[in-house]
Length: 202
Ligand SMILES: [Zn+2]
Image 1 (tube, rainbow, N blue to C red):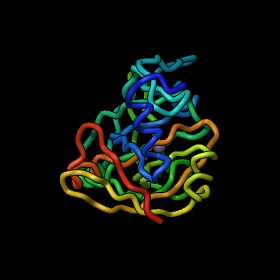
Image 2: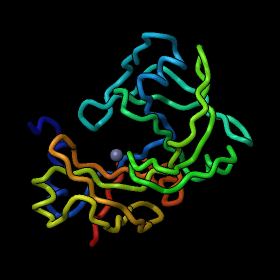
Image 3: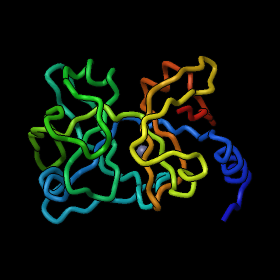
């Protein structure tokens, strides 16, 4: 139900091929067994606040990511997943000394490695570190309206103080809310701040 002005405006602009942009800072998704190594046997994630995609939330827990050149604190996103996945910006990779490929979420084969540290233990992560490829979440209805299909490559024209065009991939799911997700490097380079809109171009 459209119950506030932002929802009404975003719904209207979506039908014309525009989409709200959200910036994802570095974070980690954990599998249950890694969660228990890091936070203790039987540990569960503690909900802190909901994220825009239904069912996804920011947890209270933090994990330290250690690379050859340094370490950084990561926010943990819930719920737990089948495989642990770390999403970094390229600038994070450089300062940590970690090599990670640009991938879509879930595509982890031969991705980057790093050490994870929690209050109860450490996990040597053999693969699972990626730089998340920019993507556009949309419902099947929106895909139909814009004549876009799942996994289709598009251009995202960020309408900011430094307008920038980046490559992105369409991800269609019945459970999704229509949002474009970019990382902090893409956001900083294009001058994203506050409420940002992008134009989807084929
Ligand atoms: Zn996303």
